[in-house]
Every structure is written in C-alpha cells, then in structure tokens.
Image 1 (cartoon, rainbow over the protein chains, first blue to last red):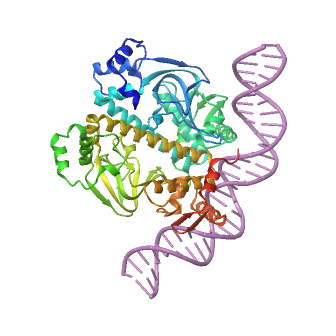
Image 2: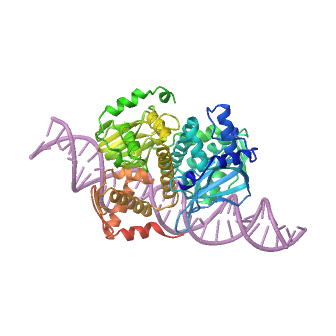
Image 3: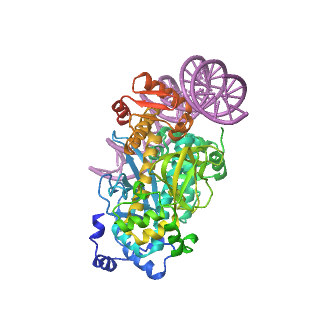
Length: 247
Length: 247
DNA sequence: GCGGCCTTTTGATCCATGTCAAGACTCGTG
DNA sequence: CACGAGTCTTGACATGGATCAAAAGGCCGC
C-alpha cells in the first residue's frame, strides 16, 4: 500500500485540527480504548461528508481511499455482474462501516449508493492501519468487524441458498426490525428505504414476488404495509416462519 | 480476548522449538516480509495436524483457538440452520486460511469437515494478533486476506441471488478449475472431492439438478464426467454460459 | 469377493417463483 | 395543479427446478 508509507505525523496533526464533530463514540470502531486512544481515533474519523439520495458514496473500480462510517442515513451496496445484472449485497445504516471489501484489491468492487440523504465519516484507510498499529485494541476490534462482515455474508448465503421466498422476506424484515431497535428506533414500525426491486435483488427474488409476499403477510395479519411504511404486528409469527419450516 | 493476554514470550519460544516442517512460504500469509520476519511467522505456523476424511477440523460453537492453513487436502465449511438444514459456505484447498468467521464472536460459527485426508497448520490466533502487531506488513496482509474472504462471499451471493442453475454450475466448475491451476494441478482434469449434494448445497440447488446439469453439459460436449472424475473440454463455452445470458 | 449402504442417474410430475401485462398509485417537477 | 416517470399491486400464464420414485453403480468392511 503506497499511500500508507507516504503518511507523516503531520498528516495526523492536520487531521486533528480539522473538524471533530463526528464523534467516533457512536460509530462502530471503538471498543476498550482508553480515553487518550479514543481521542486519537476520534480525530482520525473526522472528515464529514454528506451524500444525497441517489448519489454514489463510491463506485466499483475506484481506488480505496477511505472506509466510511455511516453517521445517519441509509446506503445500499451492490455488486455488478459484467452483463449488467446487479446484486444488492447489503443495506447499511447508522454505525455501519463500509468499504471493507475494497481492502483486498485496494480498489472498490461494489457500488455504494445512498437511498436517503446520508452523512458519512471518512476514515482514511492508511491512517486507520497506522493507528491500529499503535493501538492494539483498535486493531483487534477492526479484525472483529471484518469477521462480523464475513459472518453476515454467510447468513445471507444461507438465506439465498436454502430458504423459500416467505422465509427470506420474514428473515429480512426481522433483521431490519432488529437493527432499527439497536439504534433506538421502533422495532415494529418503520419506513423501508428501498424499493421492492432492491429488496428482491438482495433476497434473490423478483419485485413481484416481494410485493405478493408482503400482501400475503398483511392478509394474514402479520404486518401492515402501505408503500414504504411497514408495521410488524406479529414478530413471533415471522420468527416461526424463518425458524423451522418443512424438510 | 483473554487468551491473548495470557501469552508470554515463553510461549513463542516454545513454539519456535517445535517442529518447523510446515513452511509458511507456501501458505497464504506471507507477503513482503523480510527474512527475519518470515522466520518468525514460520515458527508460529508450525503445529501440524492431520485431519482424516470425514473428521471435523472444528465445529460450530467451539471456542476459537487457532486459524488453520490447509497444507494439503480438501475441506468444506458449512453453516447450519437451527432446523438442521445445512448450507455449505465454501470448499477450501491447499493454502486457504480457515476460521476467519470465528474472530467476531471468539467462537466458531460453522463446521469444517475434511472431504479427503488433509493436513492443516494450526495458527494460534492470539499469537497471530501479537505477531501482526510487531510486523506491520503481516497485519496488512492479514487485513487483505479477511477482505478477500468478503469479496469471495459477495461473489457467492451474486451467484445465488441472480444466476440460473446452469450458470451457477458453470461458474463453480470454472472456479474449481482455476484454483487447481493456481496450485499447479491440471485446470482441465481433476476429481471432485465433494458429493453432488454438497455441490448442490453450496449452489443453492438440489443434488438431482446438479446431476442433470452435469449430464447436459456432457451431452453438449462441454465436459466429461464419470462419478467424481471431471474433465473440462470447453472452458470458453462455460465462460460464455456464465458471462452474459438473458435479461 | 460379497453384501449393504451410499451416491448417482434418470424419468414423471408438481409447484414456487418468474414472466408478461395492465392498471393504480405516488411523488417530484414544471 | 397536472403531468409523467417511477413504483407498486394484482392477475394470468409459463417454466425452472424441486420432489418423488426406481434402479443402477461404486465403495467399504467383513
């Protein structure tokens, strides 16, 4: 990584003096750092950037400069097939860290698009590596974040590989619900930020199927949907749907 | 990570004196290390372990002690659903590094089973973290390995989410072929180490479908199959199958 | 070298999801 | 406020892959 060796202490000092409104405390990185270390990290994660709905945070093929921590908003990442097919690889919200897949090649391999007005913090990757070298617990935490992403992906593979449409959608809704809850929002009532088509892409289904299954769930009283608005009436029933099922 | 803090220099010395037949040069870790560093890493990756066909390298739920580098052989990893369904998450061969998903929780989340007699090198994770702290380029390389795993998973998601049976299988065969080639084996002729059912699980298809599509490929002259033996006659045709296809 | 179990193949049929199509609704913009 | 593009719903129909079933083949332990 050539960018790495070109960093001097001055760069860090420069960053320290920059705006520091983007407290890293709320983000995903810190864990077990002492106050001084935390302050260091805090300074690193400071360049704020607004991304408007529909804008790209980054595109496949561009060089990896920074990872991005979402401060607010909603972002989808998508892998693109040569022939134009796109596969939504994930939906990301406040506190999520984006761009991990770019570390391997030093180049982004998927697109990241804001689904609503969003604010992210740049985390210059070279700086992160450098700081992680000085703060072992930061490195350790970063390892866990990468690993967690792998675990998440395995979950999606399980879903795509062995669940039927109803189960997939139920799992998806529960997952969204839980992530909203973690962030202090209602776990039962929220607005979907993505289209049926995007949900379908993520779940390996067509948009009509998403629409139909949502309607069925509603008929059965499990949820209420109206456009992007969604209310979960019977989370347990959804859980039962995912949990067991046939063979 | 409690195991980490309990390591003393003595542990490392102990490991250094242990068998050192498992040269790390051939494994996936080293990259840009000087000779001395390489030797250090070499000493860490030294406990050899044979795993016989059918045996578990590790099981979901067990504590993460080591990552494992495959020296020879073939291993499948599988995520299990509560209800017993299993999803094969990957097939791993010489040089691959296993166990990355366990870092997040400190506990393995999938099973790893040898599909043929296999030899692995233990890489005590606590030791790896410690050494990576001393050797920045090792840490950097480890980050890239984790990221590469994420990229691989995204590829599988694309495959599961948006390809049809023929495309999936073609992609699978090409991938296997390429990995054998990288390791100095024939890219056109090899033995499948896994059952049709395991291929099916990995690709989100049933074993009958795998069998049928293989037969079809054979009829069309793209490949020859007989049980586990497989020969690729027309790799380009396979690539064409994966590449474009309809809408 | 035999018997039994596991794996594979292949056929017949079924069903979940895709495809195509039409119309309604929503929202941003002129 | 009306228009148009994008999104969503719903129906009718098509189809890829699943399921069920049977038989053949391979492999291992005895």
